[in-house]
Amino acid sequence: VEWESLYGNAIEKAIKSVPKVKGVLLGYNTNIDAIKYLDSRDLEERIERAGKEEVLRYSEKLPEKISSIQQLLGSILWSVRRGKAAELFVESCPVRFYMKRWGWDELRMGGQVGIMANLLGGVYGVPVIAHVPQISRLQASLFLDGPIYVPKVEDGKVKLVHPREFQGDEESCIHFIYEFPKGFKVFEFEAPRENRFIGAADDYNTNLFVRDEFKETFGEIVKNVQLAIISGLQALTKETYREPMEIIKAHLEVLNEKGIPVHLEFAFTPDEFVRKEILKILGEFYSVGLNEVELSSIMEVMGERKLAEKLLANDPVDPIAVTEAMLKLAKETGVKRIHFHTYGYYLALTEYKGEHVRDALLFAALAAAAKAMKGNITSLEEIREALSVPVNEKAKQIEEALIKEYGLENGIAEVEGYQLAFVPTKIVAKPKSTVGIGDTISSSAFVGEFSFT
Ligand code: 8BR
Image 1 (cartoon, rainbow, N blue to C red):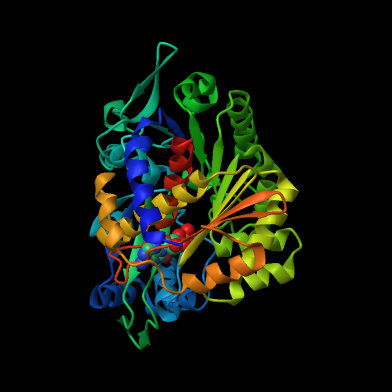
Image 2 (tube, protein in one colour):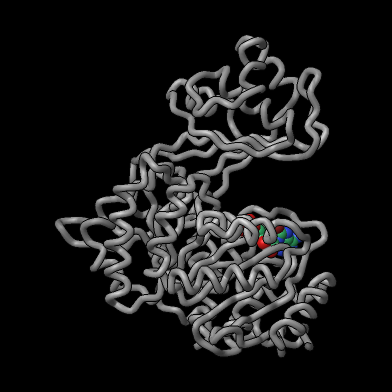
């Protein structure tokens, strides 16, 4: 297959069609990411001051949540010692204040809704209506210019305004991200690889708080959109899922009644119980986006142990196992479109047929490569530059396997009545950043595909 020429066509098509999409609803998670690059001397001094013995204890075993400075510093040290990522809720206000005073080196838009709003609205020029649980000045300042809106209710009427125009004096939901490089030294410890610890000073996204505007005037708000993307369910637990799940179901009902396709961006959901609950409502969604870890975690709660293991056993991920898992998921839930992405290739299993599905994946792969290259994309046209990134060599064996198993042709096959679309991706050798690439891939493919029909 001439992938390069298919790539060229896909981006030209996207530049023409994507800006014509009339509106996308984005729910529910938006926060502020505050990134702090750790300094060993500073961290050691803080640990000494807080009491080394107690801090070291928490670096052996993570607390469930953070209620003291010793727990905060111990949890950071836990991550450093293992080179592992971890995220904990910061419950205590004095600890939140301590973190704020400690400061940050960089502020970034966080939460899938925030990231997608800036990409779709700020970069692609597609009007978006975003759910922003708390609109503080800091939060509002992280939204790009462009057709990005939040609903504001005045005298019982909904108006759509840019988050900065909302002039909310609400809380800041800050996720403090403490980053360290490989070899980072604290006392006698040394980080085996680079990673981060996240302390979430955020009472809203962690429980999937839904604003009154969205509860009371949802029918009104969705009059302005053709598509919807939902995310943020990953934060829920067995204890907190009940109320938000009811709200989501009600929203899905309204969206489905109006014939608005809804995509679920499935991020890794640690609580197995919640994963099962999500599985129960997946059929109400038109589409779902996930990676290999997420697909494997779903197979696990579906009782497909072997398949779950297979999905994580090979690098690159075995595409036959992925297809089997997607078929199981589609048949079990009735979801019409499953978009799988992994390092090196993407697959889409759809109930319907057409090359536009594959072309949207190609557009998404270019957007991902452009983002990896630049850290941030500033225009749809700029994505063209990613055409220069070579197509992943390792994807050849993946394509071969799919040709042999399913008779794939030009990246498309028919499998048990579904269409399977495959694309090899472009991999940037030295990425500037990989934060938010998954969200870029999923939202670009979903909105792109819709614009191509
Ligand atoms: P998740 O965080 O949802 O797994 O999304 C990350 C995705 O980013 C991967 O599936 C992979 O396709 C893509 N990606 C990564 Br990671 N590094 C990349 C790179 N250097 N160039 C292009 N895509 C990349």
